[in-house]
Length: 117
Length: 116
Image (tube, rainbow over all chains, first blue to last red; front, side, top):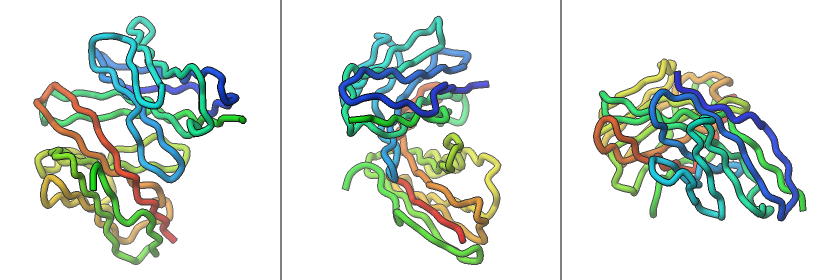
């Protein structure tokens, strides 16, 4: 069965420090992978996605993620964190159906990021 | 207005009330979704509509009743809810291409529901 694991529930970093959020997935085929961010009281905003091609994906707000098939991972990185990056981050894998014509996103439990000044 | 909008943003209701959540997408998509986000639980997919037809109902209790009158609007009708139904309800939309392919889902800001 498809699943997504985000091993870190909470992470705290200092402003200006680098960041890596981990995501591991279980999926039988080539996955569609996503990172979303959710600020308090808000919906989910798409940061970046991987469908195919270059395994290093650039997103908004200076984020990037690297797809590593051998490790079943899609870790999110940012070289220098800003206080406004404090939020909850969700990794998701897209499960494609070959009948019914709709897709399904399977989300991880999320990683809450706190940024110290 | 662009993107996916949801109203109301906050809703407090008693267990005997009937209320409705509304979602509208301005992206020209043809698939819409309801998710439930509870504290300390992963997002749960509740319903999927594709081309205005319900294609998935994830064992959701009948006190939640979705309606999709057209490809731009999605409702979630609520009646006789329980306190454990308190959560953030998120709507999303996407463009379904063909079976076997997948498009990005775009989310609304959510409705924070509190059941007393």
